[in-house]
Length: 80
Image (cartoon, rainbow, N blue to C red; front, side, top):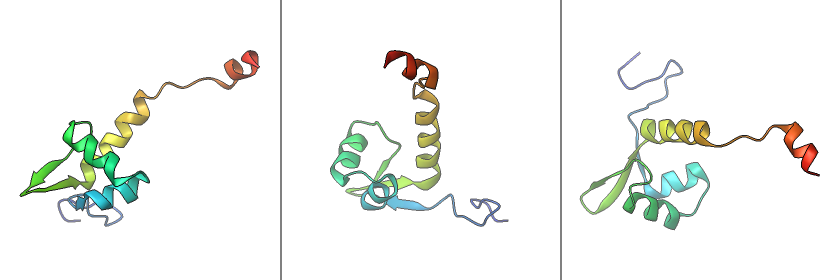
């Protein structure tokens, strides 16, 4: 297994374009662009172009999942 690869052979060092990240997250490119400018998503500029490291995006997603408040099903049933 090479550096930057998972056990499944996936390349975690892969650089992604703004369009790649928008497709990966299934949201508009404009949103990704704004988040990058506002430092809300891990990114960097390569020349005049935003770039994103796949591994950083995956870690960022996991952080968002942990920060998302969860409501128990029982709480939902009682509010109906």
